[in-house]
Amino acid sequence: MQRVFSGIQPSGIPTLGNYLGAIRNWVPLQDTHDAIYCVVDLHAITVWQDPKALQTQTREMAATLIACGLDPKRCILFLQSHVHAHARLAWIFNCVARLGWLNRMTQFKDKAGKDREAASAGLYVYPNLMAADILAYKATLVPVGDDQKQHLELANDIAEKFNHDYGVPDFFPRIEPLIQGVAARVMSLRDGTKKMSKSDPSDQSRINLSDDHDAIALKIRRAKTDPEPLPEHVSGLEARPEARNLVGILAAVTGTLPENVLREHGGKGFGSFKEVLVEALVAHLAPIQAETRRLLDDPAALEALLRQGAERAAAIAEPIVAEAERVVGFLPR
Ligand code: AQP
Image 1 (cartoon, rainbow, N blue to C red):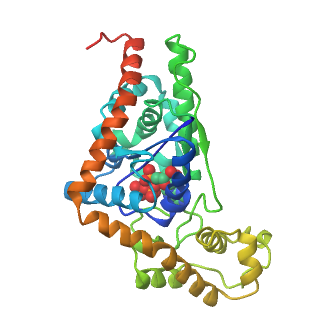
Image 2 (cartoon, rainbow, N blue to C red):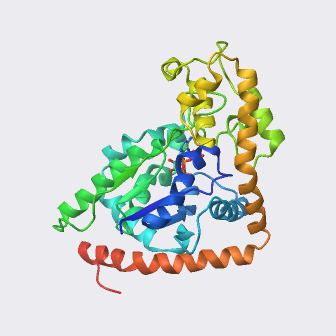
Image 3 (cartoon, rainbow, N blue to C red):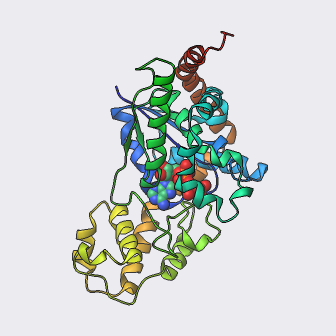
């Protein structure tokens, strides 16, 4: 069975972007693949996190993932910091990856902002840790949003260079990204050219999976649009990023295609369309929110599930990373 690996940062409440671009695509893979999913807390601290808030967000993220359909019996679900193999392999990859490769990563440029000198070294080497997350399990398929494509290409460059430099041609496998769905990149509600992000300073830019009816209604009503009515065909969305984003979201949450959404709403103004979108979002998210709350009511049970997940993950990653350490010349422990 092909092994898939994916992760998500507990850097805030998961957004509709995280959900449509990643989480919801992870669910069916549990039945067809050997699926490993991780809450990547080591990645989260590449940007300052308040320690107490990080604990809360980590529990919330794990509970949300389970509420979205990840079943700890059908997949391995755990916290990255609980499996030390990730950090050990990441260090080796820090020594394999070239500065020139990291300099090309657009996510670092976006997240570091204007004051690049003040960004953490961790944020800079983030893609090396991401490569380690996947390759510690020799996973070959990585379901992610479209924004992560560049990092996966870098992971393949690292794997290839490791295999070549240490003369172990088949040690790490090639990784394939799995980018699925009509909303593989959900954009900010305030700017259709920027991706929706849980750490965007403006809460109005995103739908959080925990948002209630009022919050969703307010955000969608205020979402940026243009003055034209909705087009009749998808070709009419090309130069209209905000319209394309909202149509894509409605298509994704109602399980249809943008052309079908436009068949129904083309030619209408955004007012009535936005009301339909609000109701569709609320109906889709309400059961997830109820289940998340139920899971958070018993933090001890939730943490026990995550510890069991970590044990199963370590049983796979430990021998692979120990072998990588032997390959680079470390003496056995
Ligand atoms: N806007 C998006 N559209 C589609 N997919 C998205 N993903 C993130 N944003 C969108 C996908 O979500 C998964 C988990 O992402 P992450 O938490 O590891 O980090 P990220 O990509 O940096 O997401 P955020 O929300 O922007 O987090 P912060 O604000 O902490 O940086 C990935 O598969 C990603 O593709």
